[in-house]
Image 1 (tube, rainbow, N blue to C red):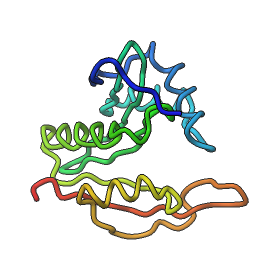
Image 2 (cartoon, rainbow, N blue to C red):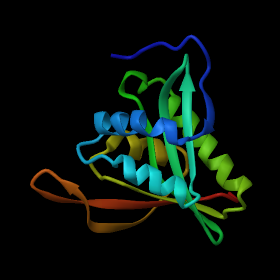
Image 3 (cartoon, rainbow, N blue to C red):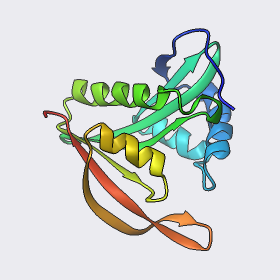
Image 4 (cartoon, helix red, strand yellow):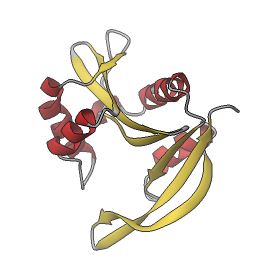
Length: 155
């Protein structure tokens, strides 16, 4: 069920106080979610961790790691009630702009082949297929590959 927002979502830095809600949201969205510790470790490591919120509700979040000349999107999620309304695209545009501000030349990500909606979004946003990482993700009955994608931030 989609939920209509009264206000436009805004982005802010993730805080420690957000972690329990983020961990619950991740568990609602993925069969093999990140733990609260994964998010805490990402914040501690200095990764770009942001919250996407509207109407006093967290509707999404993103975690991006920076390395020399590169940004790597580790996690991006929109709450199920807010999917299909363009918020994932809007949050991706924020992440891309932030990577550019951080002087990254490219933005990398991995995505499950079975995540057709995300792959379609990344294709439409100009990400290029790079390779497949075999048996990367845990999956029911074994492992699932990861499709590695890259966006040239100077294009």
